[in-house]
Image 1 (cartoon, rainbow, N blue to C red):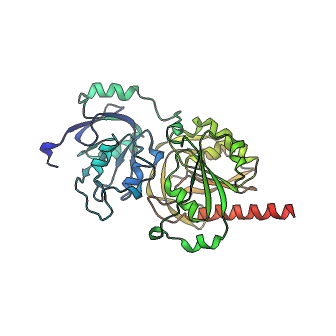
Image 2: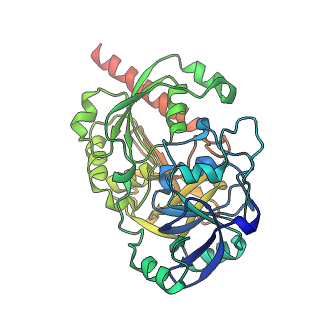
Image 3: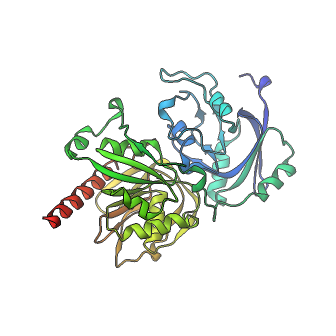
Length: 388
């Protein structure tokens, strides 16, 4: 698109910093927390990840939209971000899987974006001063007027955004990873049994459900406010706590439900928001990170083994608040030493802060799904022996 046809757009941060560029996607005004993602690939998965609900994402990779979009790469039914920020935008994608350009896709779903700004400078600012609210507009080009709206918006801390992304009804997921993308078929085939998993949906990604199905799980996805009694009525072999957006401390129903489920002593596996909610249920606290972790190359580990992981979160578990008598740290983020994984010392309960389903990202942590299935397998054998 020639710049003569481009629509001017304005980005204003809560501290008054302004950037002028050009519109892509929908026109109008949007306000959210401005964060950055350092991934070089996977922009469609990022845009449709429910964990980004309420946020405007800066893409640090300078080219966006070159491969277009397609239905297979969506992590939910539509984009979940409030807006997108890019250096350069491709309006005419080139890829055999592409069915639509990125600007047209965002326009279809009423998501505004701004491009043509210095995303390096903007990212450095967020790193230095922390994530903050911001606004993108094509209709309000007066900096003071847009700043007033940005400063009136609520901060992310204290927000329960799970209710905006959780499913409204119970459904079953049965689609595994398609054969062309399966990278661990031998491990999945070795399981040999089928297990029922109830997934508590705080904003679950489709590829997480695919990985569970690939390991032979019958997955029943339930709303985030489902009572523990109803979850246990499905007689699950295990419970999965999904990723999701917002402040985990504000998801009080999910915390209370998880605390009750701990009493069942069934295997529990949590990812991202699920990890944080499990931490709260165990008695720990969470805190907001300065600018969060969002990218595909976050190193995590503890002893001898390092995993390169995909991460997307604003909050972390406070290590000093963990009840060390019952739970231990299994992984640390090796960039800043924040808690990246916990494990119960006596029960088959564990969680990680990162996204092991690799959508987008590396496959290093896929073994965690296998560990969850093995925990359910062991629990089933124990129950059978007790009955005998």
